[in-house]
Image (cartoon, rainbow over all chains, first blue to last red; front, side, top):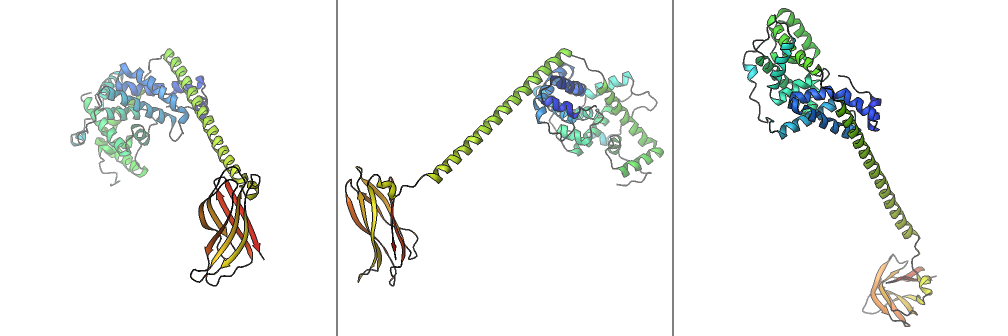
Length: 180
Length: 228
């Protein structure tokens, strides 16, 4: 994921519309992707709008303690969670003790040509079936430069939780794609 | 946790290995293990497939909406401008309040420092004065000796003079001492009074400055006498 340079960020704070446009262009794709994964196609655009409004509102207060992309995605994460809560779809119940650890792992066929169109479609469907926190972790991890620490900051959880959540999510994805 | 290359590794570890979130030594040992363990390699390959697949999904183009972009940028610019304007206004307000408070404090200090205390000379214009006529130590048989201040208070003003407190000071060791209170001198009246305070059995009138101060509702009246 490309990062906005410091000068453009400074121009954003000085209310330069061109710089704000660059900020939008830079982070729209990851924000939209995260939104689509989390709340679905229909509401993704709304989440995207709300995220950028929140980002524009707070950009002057951004202190640079984290990467701008991490900060923007953390804002997007919060907006997604807000939408999910509004729809009363947020599953706040504790996950069962890691079932995937007890069960034998599902593995993909080594002979199969991976990452083709069909595989991606099935994977997207499988991701939609993940619990929200796992979907969130996998989606955030999909952006190459998001480390566990950055994901933990965005999701407001501990680093160990990110590690465990990602593992569970991957096991579950493999299970959903059994037979592929 | 063992780092021997021949040992199997838990699937959780392969997940963290894939993400590059393991210490270098552990990572190297696991890399060595991969060469000789097809089952662990299969686990890693499966994790890699879903991870790379998710990354590819994240790279897919999103619908471009130039109108939305224009609208959002306009709204964002307006919001930032409004926020900055509010911040600037608050800054000015804060600065103004700080200056006003400082100015008020400075004015109060200046007034306190420069305001002339109303003394006998100030009262002289309104014909009110106090005169310390004599200072002496008196000894009686039954009472302890006392230092006495014989004072004349003249009120030439049209208003009554309300004396709230009388304070004396002397070189006998006492700095200031309140000796009487609540005394009223009518307009045109001249009052002679003795104010006294007890002193030790062997006390003598020492040379020095003896002072009397009358605190009134309008200010202070002071007189003093130097005993050679």
